[in-house]
Length: 194
Image (cartoon, rainbow, N blue to C red):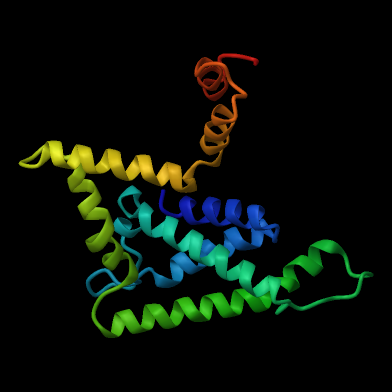
């Protein structure tokens, strides 16, 4: 589950930025595996706890960061340019070599530094983001406060641009394009053809 998140998020963000989406998605998975610890006790292996759904937030963060790094590098033209006579598929793979080297080197340095301090990227994300978010969903002493804070965060993150379609509908409603909210409901749910 957490291997799919960096691939699809990196790919979608790269498409949005108009760069090679497949290369960005594959580099996101490679970067995810680069920062993943390869030791379980004394054995040299990848722990299943780092590849499951509990670690999906790490995958999301890595997918976003790698796609942005890839876009930055490609827009600076730090790529290998081949002549036009070379087939497109070969040219695309060569143009991703330098960005891939830079991105995986940065991720390797991060993994090495965190390993030196006795931790890893996934554990830091689990401790600082995933575990507190998971506790928000449990009913406990502060159930109502958790519910209100979650509702506020969601409301203002959508208003800040997390969902551009919703913002476009909100702007169209403010401009008087819709007479009532039913047009937004039907269009968003797929129930209407309006």
